[in-house]
Image 1 (cartoon, rainbow, N blue to C red):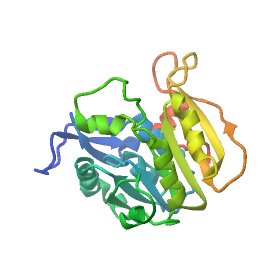
Image 2: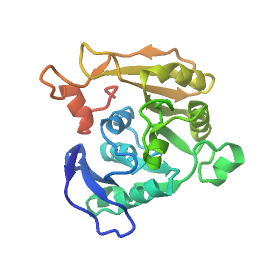
Image 3: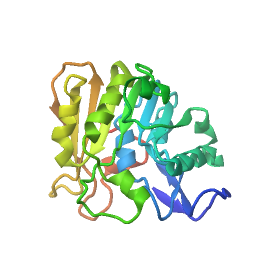
Length: 266
């Protein structure tokens, strides 16, 4: 990701930046000070989707839209539904789609302001109908409530996990994804057990990639990919190591961050 000093002439937006992703293939309009700013987590999550994907994908908790648009950027026939709860971040997602350098993606992405934790009829009425999607990706608030509290309410909502969050978000993903459709989530390693528990009976054939900042350091993220209604067993995949000894991105991490490669090599 690189930042540019360019500012969009949008009077309703608070201070923001326009950041290039996938080496300038698309740009994201995101808050400069308040709220969530997307980076490598979003690119790793997007890279979990196969490069051959051609269907309809939802990005739960999309923020300004980085992960969903990264899928659309790499998968040229995919459509991304950017699902965001907060009006402030949904406005940034709309501004992202309106950015002139995103014209090629605009027809394959839409913003839906909705609460993905809803269930049943309420979820469908919000625009998330059962069996309507081929994939769901999510980067939910995964920090525990005691972890690095912030006075920024919008950022806290994007980062701090409520009780039962994985259960409610994954329940919704299982409802809206078609049988054999895909699912992927990025979170902290300590969240792996509740994620797998929430997936039980809903998603199978889970593939888990630990993400390490360096080869000799403990994992800081896990990315889990699975298939709806599959009964295949879980696999622990080779880790993704982000940095070499010189602190530069590893070749694999750079390829993922730049949209040149999928996380699972497919």
